[in-house]
Length: 245
Length: 245
Image (cartoon, rainbow over all chains, first blue to last red; front, side, top):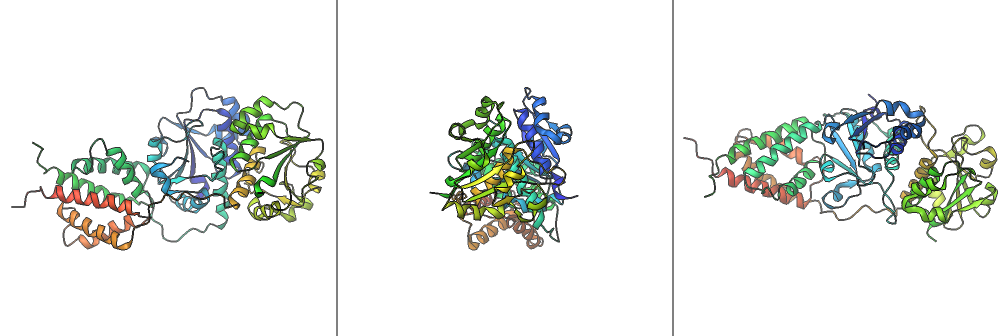
């Protein structure tokens, strides 16, 4: 499958139909076709959406809707999120131009998702936790926040232009799907709690660090099987810790 | 004057207020501020324009209007026009990425105009005749025509990124030195042996898998500290496993 056809644009809680339609047109302009919406606002004006989609009404009609972000990306080996948020995630954010070759390469083997948050709040920390890559779109300090459809366009444009120079590499091993990675994190969380590496109070924060470490590069199915094994054995060891008096 | 401030976005006969407002926001996102309109449609909805401009209302308010394209670009040493039109002009059309350095360089010395035609017809041959440069935005054969504000955004984005004004945030934790990473692997090896994840016979092979996982991307000092902490706590838990009979 040509890589662009394996890349899914995921809008999380979009509010305005006009933006959704503009996203469809931008996608078609740049050779993308898969649109997923996560719990769109019930007040979305679908007539506006159709107007702004213009000749890309087909993408709008064939959109898929999901109740949660996790469901929308469950089968995706690579999940990139567009965010200007600072904090823990800032350090491994890269520009769409920097990420484009990696996203295209991954899309040869696995569905790839690119997440965009709602018009008012962007992606939540929970959504960002699902991401293996963070995209930060360059913008002026004077006004950093781009319109939703504009953000999609810039990412789509960078992917489209990057297809030119793009040469598929030789030996690839498929990245593991998001659902499998998430199951691994659940098990690690339990193991790290049980051995006392973290407390229930610090767990969320520590798990962000753990996620970050495992999102620096590719994680194949085989990698995740190893990591699941480590967690399983750690849980077994933790079972021998005597209860506190 | 910084070059971006000397670059004028010129919309010729724009029809929709929403697009004009979106152009303002895109301009401000990318550090541009000078907007000129040539004979906008009398039915332009200025309320829509203000809504879509969002926090870039100032650019909208300070727009200049002209009766003809020639007047709008009269003082400009370089006039670029965005067009997908074929024919005579095709041969010297270049992409926004190719033109950006030249436009920025020119803008150090002279006002520079970038022309965009109306939503329905694009730039006329008369408008193109005023242009010293033709910009062709890459797009899919399946749907070549971009929304007006999207076209402006892509050109503005290419100019902005070409200024190198954008500095990716530097709050990175430095990548950890090899010695620290090796010390971490020594500790993990002991922990994974002690919890029974691997035997002395399989340890070398398993550790290759573990190394591969942690070598897929960057590993910062902070990451390695976390991983050392996991190993230390795992060793502690393993200390409670009763010896085999």
